[in-house]
Amino acid sequence: MDLDVDRAALTAVAAGGVLGALTRYGIAAAWPYTPGGFPWSTWLINVSGCFLIGVLHTRVRRRLPRLLLGTGFLGGYTTFSTAIVEVSQAGPAYLAATLIGALLAVLAGSLAAR
Figure 1: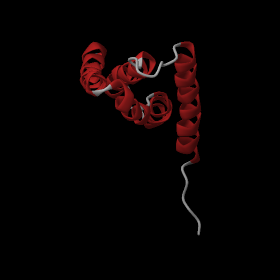
Figure 2: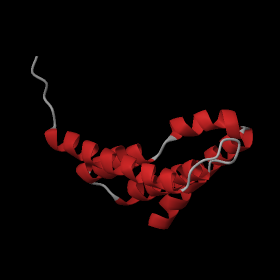
Figure 3: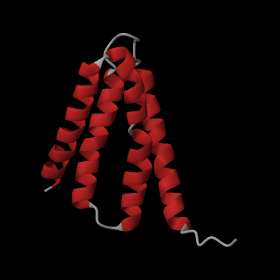
């Protein structure tokens, strides 16, 4: 079966994802999470990623840069699955801080980009 693959889009998402994941790993390694404490590095990663998503979707209109930076880099950078796992240890305050922080960050990024 011949699939019509947009190689430029695939390359943009893959390259951005690698860079985003490496950036996230670097931040998490530099600021490790202590079980039972507040997972500040994950919170910072997700909130800053949401801020950048707000900026990106307000400013960048072209498809490939949006795929590279949004789907790729910010998709690899943010880590909401880890945040949800950490809720079991950090508690509901962390969940609330993550959700509220993320939503406010998207709004702030969008407003700042305007």
